[in-house]
Length: 220
Image 1 (cartoon, one colour):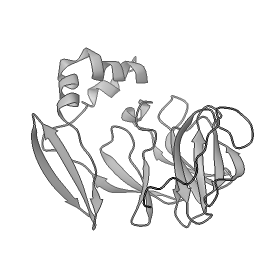
Image 2 (cartoon, one colour):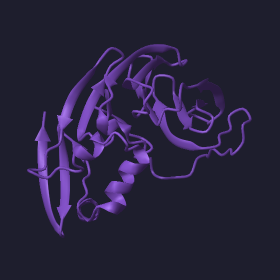
Image 3 (cartoon, rainbow, N blue to C red):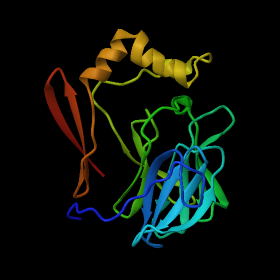
Image 4 (cartoon, rainbow, N blue to C red):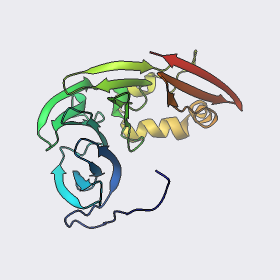
């Protein structure tokens, strides 16, 4: 907690406890374990928190983008964008990777494969997920999802829904349109950004536009 060095994990191989492309990690306080998601091996690697000794390896289905540990539920949640062969964004399993349920139907915006390596976080004893470009945070249990927050910035909306409706657009084409082919989107993306500071029952959305800052608090 004081920032002092304790230990490290390293791999770049396929041996026991080694990884090739670690994209994100989570801590499981119930089992005192650190869990690392290796995207290239489509697996979770579990290590003991006290000494980072390797515990086991859990295979995952269809290369999820990210995952989270559902507190006190002996369950994991995996996030899948719309790849054209799945109907839901979330897949719930037990801690050994055995399937329990699928949640949160895909929508046009969920076809984007790009985004943060970890869009899950635990707050107020609940696992939450922020599907990319949704402007919405959902709380997760093994049986259901609940919309916890939705972010509004006046009339500002990014990106426009119509971009995701074009049938010929895949994830790469959508991101290319947003980042390169539209001055409107490119300017908005550079000039505006948002963050989510947490504290005392509130989520604050901080928006920056043309060097002016406006802070809005969203209460439950």
